[in-house]
Amino acid sequence: MMTKRGSDGDSGLAGWLRTLVLTLAIVLVPRVVLCQPFTIPSGSMEPTLQVGDYILVSKYPYGWSRHSIPFSPPLPQGRLLGQAPKPGDIVVFKKPNDGRTDVIKRLIGLPGDKVQVVEGVLRINDRPVRREWLSTSVEAPFGEAIPVGQFKETLPGGKTYLTNSWGSGTPGANTGVYTVPTGCFFVMGDNRDNSLDSRFDAGAIPKGQSACAWDSALNAYLPPELGMGYIPADDLVGRAELVVASMSPGASVLKPWTLVGHMRWDRTLKRLGGSL
Image (tube, rainbow, N blue to C red; front, top):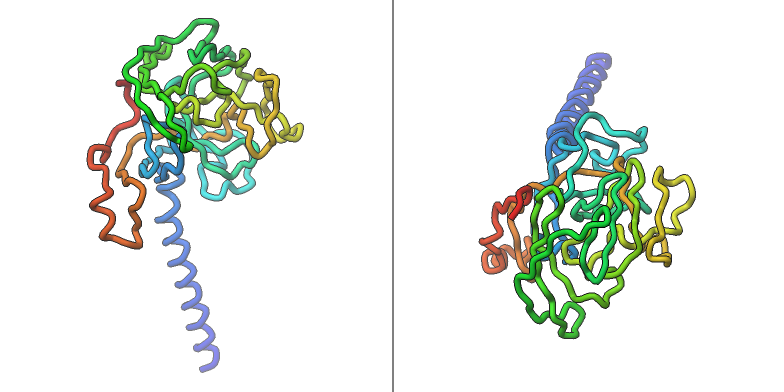
């Protein structure tokens, strides 16, 4: 009888473990292999992405790395399958200097490209990208009213998208020339003067922590917790594909009655992959 009870206990434990493993597989495998949801916490990608957007990011276009798995386990570096990203893609990646924080920006420069910003105008390989003024509005992102210009920008490959600009006197509006190293990419936010991106060098990163040679085209270093620099290919998580839903500030899932009034219906199921 005692043996039978022990056997029943072992069988129950094994069944519980099988159920746990199956549940984890059902939850995690699609997030690792296919897609993962993210929320937008800041305005660095405005006007393309808004604070409160819930987006879907595909994992398979660029292949898979350890950062494809939640919590980024300490696996060997490198990517499995997939293709290289294209200029204009909206990419999610791990912030290079901590390997944990998810960041979303637009990919601007490929390995070997020379990237520069002059008087607010993006230049790639010594040529200014096409930039068309659309409108100017007055905003107060930090409490002080400033004119914000909206532009349509067209990359050399033909990808077009909208950007915001505060003018030519901001820190990232005039830079040196960045030559993108092998195995890395150059990214920028569409909200050009309210974005921490590859224009701002993570110069204090310990030697050997990344495969990239970090540039200092601004001739100034930021603290390691603030800098960004180039994005190693291994740090890519995926490509933003779709705004599933969007809610303005004030909505809370803990207060369901606030959701309908704050829902931005015009942004629901908005595709992110194409040109304007």
